[in-house]
Amino acid sequence: DTAVSQTPKYLVTQMGNDKSIKCEQNLGHDTMYWYKQDSKKFLKIMFSYNNKELIINETVPNRFSPKSPDKAHLNLHINSLELGDSAVYFCASSQEGASRQYFGPGTRLTVL
Amino acid sequence: GQQLNQSPQSMFIQEGEDVSMNCTSSSIFNTWLWYKQDPGEGPVLLIALYKAGELTSNGRLTAQFGITRKDSFLNISASIPSDVGIYFCAGPAGGTSYGKLTFGQGTILTVHP
Image (cartoon, rainbow over all chains, first blue to last red; front, top):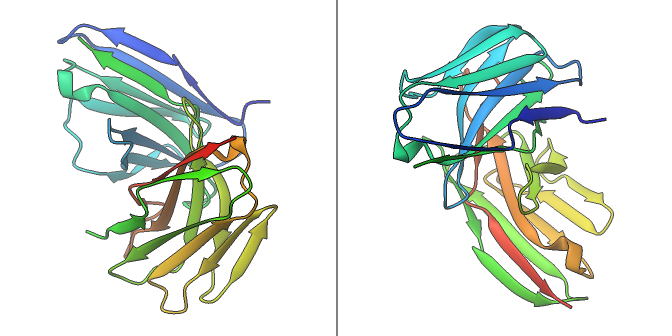
């Protein structure tokens, strides 16, 4: 039983394309997050949602648009992909913004 | 913004050895978390600490919340090959940061059989 799942696992695309990554959690949590891990393995938060409401937006370019259709899902849509968007993107969830966050397996995005 | 500094950046040890790593901050944290990331996977929570001076174990892992609240330590005893991975410390950013975690740069652990 996967607690936090993401699709796809790998995403290879051309510069300028638009792509989406999906995330689902079955832990009953009400807060979900997107993190970006760069090539040096540094993890940085991008967004958080609580009960479908945006709570944190860490000065991410507006080409990135998260959408939460319900509290179990948080998707990330990226417009006009750039080379610098290549990274591993992790979804995570927690209860009521708690520190104990549970991460998905990650989506490795490669922009060519 | 808040920063967490982990050391060492990497470690190469023999199976059976004990491992120590630490994490320091320029500001006070009220919670310290230790995560492990296996290659190609997401970080997995190992230990969470909530009180200054707290010492918590999870199997061969022991973590401590520093008395100053500006540091934390993780020890692994009798390392085995599956301990290989990246270990991250993390803590909640200050203020009204609802769930925002700051992560250290990670300690890469390699265990030779």
